Image (cartoon, rainbow, N blue to C red):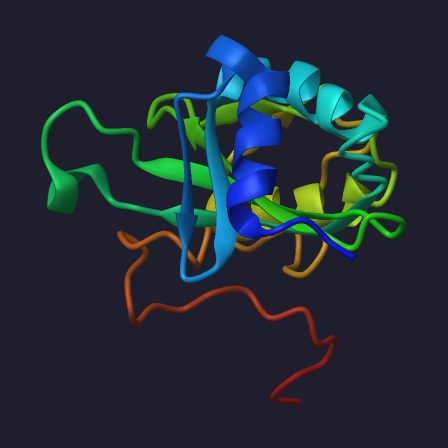
Length: 169
């Protein structure tokens, strides 16, 4: 039987110690916030801890929190990782803050190879550089595309290069 969200919160808090800047339960889900600079260490610990046993990276995406809307020194971006333990049947959401300039975080491909394409998608659509990624290049947009369309400051309208050869002929 999986742990309750509160039990998981307590165990993750014990495992991460000061690497967790916040840990809470929201709507029945356990959520932990960590500094982006410690993401590889945190992820490796969550995977290798036998009691937690998070062997699966289910999803990885980014959020543009737009520092202008939030004000202050709050980081503009965060990377969100969804983890799952096949054996223990529990889930965990990990959020890592990413600075605005330059937006960059270390790759977790060395921990979970499945992160490869998801990290490329984050780079392509948000422009967050994934340091140490083995093949960081566009995955959805053509190489000539300018900008990163999921950023809140990306213009709503504008002409972009077409990847379709002979379009309009």
